[in-house]
Length: 220
Image (cartoon, rainbow, N blue to C red):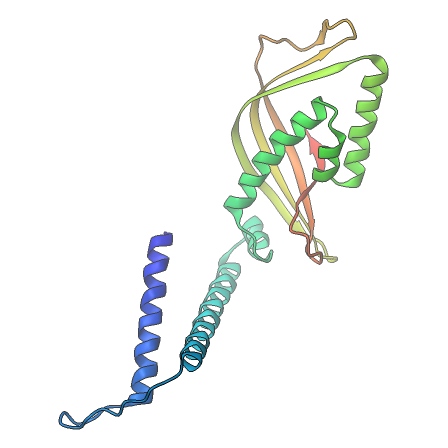
């Protein structure tokens, strides 16, 4: 796809340059000698910059028109996603998959620093409380994420205050264990791979300059 976009971009540049030269030089009879005008390096660079800006403006306008058309034709979840500025569905899902892996690992390993970075304040407080209780009881957790079988956006909403929430369903294969202070397994089976469905909600304040999506809710 990017190769085609590059070709289209070069064609646009070529057409604009030809049109600009034609408007400046015009046409001439076959026997007339062309008028040659020498321009300075500064003038040449300025002309190139002006053309670059013109092309960029036209491409941005075309992109905006296409996005507006997509919003108009879309329904339900897609309509909400299209209305989120600079939202890229594929990139969002890729980042969600990485966040899923990091949060599971951080929670099992009591890595509060990573959890704080990736979750909202209320959910982080819940994670902290569970970690505290396990620490006091001498319980340790082990989570082995084998693979994520499915990752789908289930719902999306934007509040009147500009808070976007996207609900993502993960279906994954995991091995989860809880061990007591003596290292004995008190919950789970290290030889049993569980197929688990998690529904996580990610949130972002569209009024904020931060592009980060934070995990604010989890449920099975």
